Amino acid sequence: MAPAVAQLLFLQLVLGPTLVMAVQLEIAVQNFRTLNMDYPKVKFPDDFKGYCNGFMSYVRGRKEQWYCPKTHYVLHTPWKTIWKSCKNSESFCENYNEYCTLTTKPFPITICRVNKRQPPTSCRYSSTETNRKLYLLCSSKYEGQPIGILGLYKRT
Image 1 (tube, one colour):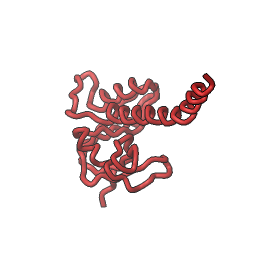
Image 2 (tube, rainbow, N blue to C red):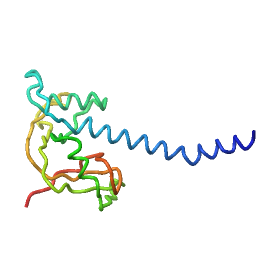
Image 3 (tube, rainbow, N blue to C red):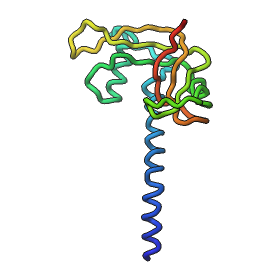
Image 4 (cartoon, rainbow, N blue to C red):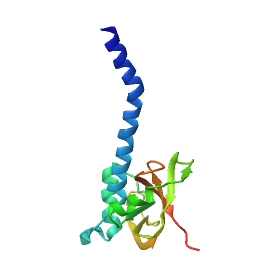
């Protein structure tokens, strides 16, 4: 009986953290797909007064947050197209403790920015649609999946 208990304890100590990390990674990928991807692009009812107001109400509900995120990026391209960007992430972004990459081509994106002149309890957003290259956080160096958008590539 003692060897079985020892084996179980060993598995919990060694495999437990690995399983937790795998679950956390899967949650991060799913959150990226849910909160940063909208393809094909949804058309919200007129009551929302614009795309970003509708999408950000969804984001805030999913995150269960009361405050208004200042800037949020929404990609309008198929998942497989974005996923290819994280196949080889040679850069390690120490500030985020994750691998990151600059996409090789621009993608259609909507930038949602909170309007500055409004009551603090109101979350009204302006929309900017553009095609830009992105800095992405990736789940691993090779064959990773996107888990976040760091920002947009500045044109020169």
